[in-house]
Length: 276
Image (cartoon, rainbow, N blue to C red; front, side):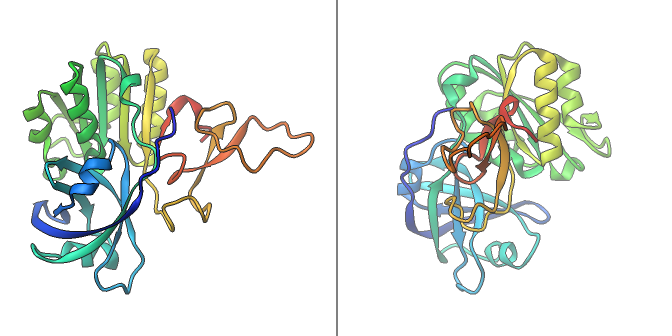
């Protein structure tokens, strides 16, 4: 998919609202009109904690409308715990938007969105844009249990249909969400997915079985977020339009893949171009 024009900058944001749709999952809303204006579906921001004592955290842009943007996070350590304790009126810095997001026109007219856990967050803006342009959208949403299936009503309100899968069988299909995609066999033009890497590999395999392509948003812990440290690489077909042109291949180089940076060339890639 084509590279997006970089428009990253540091935005001073004010927390406008906070909610906890499930234990350990927090959605923070900010007044950040410039992020709303420039962010594209699937991009992320580096969130700089107010204390300045911890490194920034990469979070995908969730809601984006008017002058409000929101981020969904899971409380898993001191960085996310500090962010989760923010309250309306608190200030912090957002650096972004960063990365290459979803290629919306290439997704076509009948799209299956596949979400694993909080991987649902980067899929809301693609759903909004696709539906606004008349596409049909179905969300396949999987999580550990029914309590971890959050905000599905936001997709329904846009006009998307939704199917669920849970590891414990407490809601919808009992098992993997990718099995749900394979079993329902809807006539999708493409799939778009975000979630844990094993799930995304399975999405790519299911897409191949169905004879379609899939765009996958890779989850990774970013150190810099701008591609400078090369700490978040993934093997990618050398012929991909997203493949970095450097370092140049050495004399006699026969490898058909290059290492792409998830934060820079990604986080969204065509699954069939990944060599993972």
